[in-house]
Image 1 (cartoon, rainbow, N blue to C red):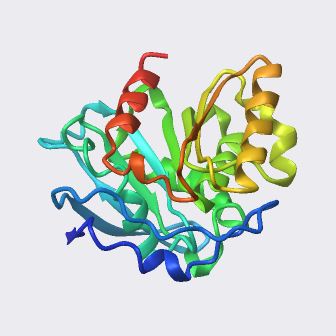
Image 2: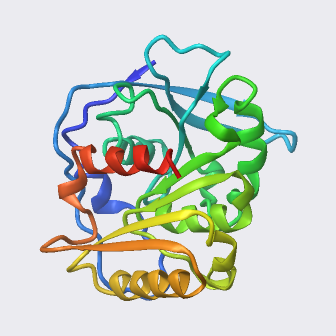
Length: 249
């Protein structure tokens, strides 16, 4: 078990590499609203290729392996290291246990990000974890922050049959993924971006327009006065309201 304090995350974001298609702006330090310290457990899984995939796990109170649960596949920001799993988790910590959600948050093996090759590991990861944690409706809600948001689109477009919803804060499809948005037309896609987050705003507006023109269900909220890290979402309240609404779609 690993207890993580949600208060002191800023230093992580002073050094991580943000990889994105069209922005020259630097990400701000992340300082989500301090909350109580929920417990995230870190586990390791051996994949068929021999790759060791480490991941963070949060279970609801009184977890019952015979039941199904809403499961959030949370893709971390930055270099997608363990520290970044912690940082991303801070946005979703409040409400996870209270609302009965399971969180799975994988660490990028050998620094290969989840839109640079490691996304190929996700189907096996989900298949193996489903032996113990059964997803509600057989599908997963995918969320990601920054590099995690880019990863969310890569994984969703490659595995649309496994996806219940997509949440990016921020994030957008890069390269080949932009040509696969038609695969997401039956999946609710919600995006948040800071008003001051140059480059990301335009790319995400284009994504919203493209998805809706294809007949999809996409929405984008441009957050006034916010930069790359959307501080006002740090308490998790709005995020879980959204996630709970996705369960009904």
